[in-house]
Image 1 (cartoon, one colour):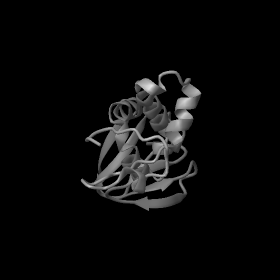
Image 2 (cartoon, rainbow, N blue to C red):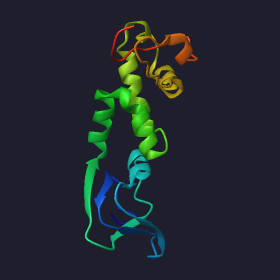
Image 3 (cartoon, helix red, strand yellow):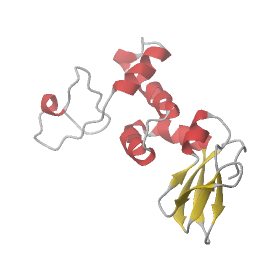
Image 4 (spheres, one colour):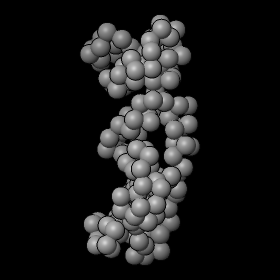
Length: 149
């Protein structure tokens, strides 16, 4: 991953250490296992804003941004997990979630802009058997992804 290269992958570091550097080679950060890098640039469709240089032997997973978008489309309920891992809610995730919401019959009349806005406002709720839905949500709209109510 070099500064200025097209950002086409999100990298997940599973082993080793690397340092993030700016265009001049100045060290910006030191990263290790379980770090995610390149996500903001890849998800925004820009070039990498930093470079990454291995300090030790590094094992990393490279996730193509298109595969990421497809994962979000197939598993929209994992938006919260993704948001926690990345520290923000990517627009691509919102778009994938919005497409999923558009397949739900009462929401099919909404346009894409309205579906993205709705996806951005929805918050996941996890209920255990016996929990009351109204106590766990602050919304008048609840979309049940799995389970029975």
